[in-house]
Image 1 (tube, rainbow, N blue to C red):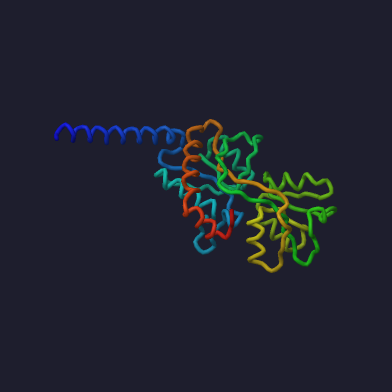
Image 2: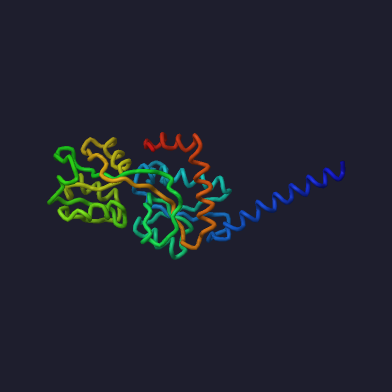
Length: 250
């Protein structure tokens, strides 16, 4: 009996040591031990925005990242940044991760996680205008957030004048005042504005996309751990409940 107890204790210790060593491996790649420093641009509801009543950053992306951190037994220090600056913050080691609706783009020279959401792009416009397709915006001005897939998409149309800005919410407000003819946004973001404001409507989706979490190119162990946690989480009902919570679909 004593030998059996000793064997069991040894197995428990070895399992604990193995788990701790694994944790140490990927946390060694963090700027601050025990904490994920994560950048986001909170101007893109329902993915990330500022809750006016609490002042906290909320959204689908935020809940996804919080779930991963909890499963890894890590805290999160959120860093609010302009979308166009997050990639450089990741590259230079100012933050561990970025989550803000990033589409895969090898030219960004960062490591991308496996996709955690599949989306699309559209054009938001004032409902009194008569647009049915993207070609109807020929000769018009369409705004897009700097550094986004939307900007790359719209600037590919030579007949459309493309303008940029760093804050999507500011671009939408300018659309409301007639400064632009349209704003290119991810479809769930545009739908959020349509649902909450009778001034707006939008085109059917004009392109498909998917979102990833980003980290520095040399954080191979960290991104592998993120992918592992994403796969586990997305296979659960909790992931589906988040989609429902934020009014988006997969």
